[in-house]
Structures are given as structure tokens and as C-alpha cells.
Image (cartoon, rainbow, N blue to C red):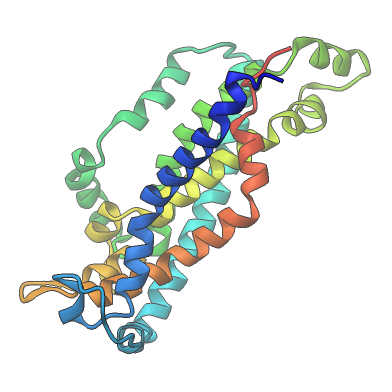
Length: 273
């Protein structure tokens, strides 16, 4: 019995993907490993070392708790506001008076191409004048402003893939525009919206430029906290690795439990009937 070529290649593909996964995960593994090393064992790296928890003992302090709390509150509020604003905007663009991509839609999308460094100084002047510097409210507004265009961009694509026959059937059954949205359109694009919101969560959680420029002591996030271990005396790699390991725990755990919905959302609209 002859074995098909695809079956012969399957083990090779599996081995190749496994090797690629190892290469991809190696920086994370090395970061976690470095968090248990003394500074002299990290750079240059040593394979043989005595594990220690000194880095975690120094990193875990009230300042870390404050920055972690700020990151959680700011990220959750930003993601929630992004969902409340972005999904209705996309719905109006696709099914409302705006219809199809218009100048407003193009404006929403092209704002994602604007480099953050281009607005640092103008925004600094504005927030200083209105007294929002170093506040959670400011960071939530900034991250919402950066998350909404991304969500609108993706949601417009998902909603345009919803079959028109389903929407027409809902209207024949007596659904008005918003009832059709809640009972027909939103359930169809829920997976895509969830995967996009996860992306917004990760981007907001890791954002460094705005957090460094507009926060000091009250509203600093975890990236700002890790920045303190980059000093003029040198880089404290062990402590930075310990802080980074703590910082990635929430996104990793969240992604682990949401991986099925993420895959489903990423595949939304990939196959059309």
C-alpha cells in the first residue's frame, strides 16, 4: 500500500512547527530563567547557577502593587470603553446612514497609522492645561482613543461578512435596526470582536511611550515600573526579568483560557458560504 506524499510530510511538518515554537518561546523561557539568577549570572549568561528568589523579594513591594493595580484598572476601563464605542460605530458605518467605507471610516482607520511620538508634545501641553497629568482618567482616554480605530477597522470587516439574507429575515420578523444588531449581527461577530478586544488588551497592557510621558507616581503602569531598573549605573537584568515575568502572567493566563474563542474569532470571515 502506497503512502501518500502528504502523509509522509506530516511528521516533518510537525517537527518543523515544534522547532519553530521552541524558537518563538525561547526569549520568554530565558526571561523567566534569568529572573532566578543573580546579576552576575545573567550577563554574560551562565548555564550553571544557583537559583535565588532575591530578585522577586526586591521587586515585589508596595510600588509594584500600585503599578499593577493601575495597569489592571486602566486596561480594563480602556477595553470596556473601546467596546462600548467601537462596536456601535462600526455598525453605523456598515448598516447605518454612513453605509460602506466613507471619509469618516477612512479617518478612523488611518488614525492607527499615526505614530504616537508625533502627538507626545501637543498632548502634553493639553493635558497639563486641563490638569489631567499623571491620572488614570487620562490614560484610559488615551488608550481608548488608540483602541477604537483598531476595533472599528476589524468590526467593519466582520459585519460586512454577515449574510444579507439573515438581516433581511430579521427585518421581516419585525426587528428594528438595533434589535437586529443585538439579536442577529452581534452574535455573528462576537468571536471577532472578542479577539480584537484581546489584541487591544495586550497593546494597552504593554504600552510604554504614553505611560512614561504622562505618568509619574500616581498612575504609572507596569512598563513604567520596569523602567526603573534601567539606570545610569547599568541594567539590572535579573530584576527586570522578575518584574517582566510578573507582568506577563495576567495576559498569558487570560490568553490560555480564551484561546478557543480567539481562534474562532480570528477565523471569522475567513470562509464564506
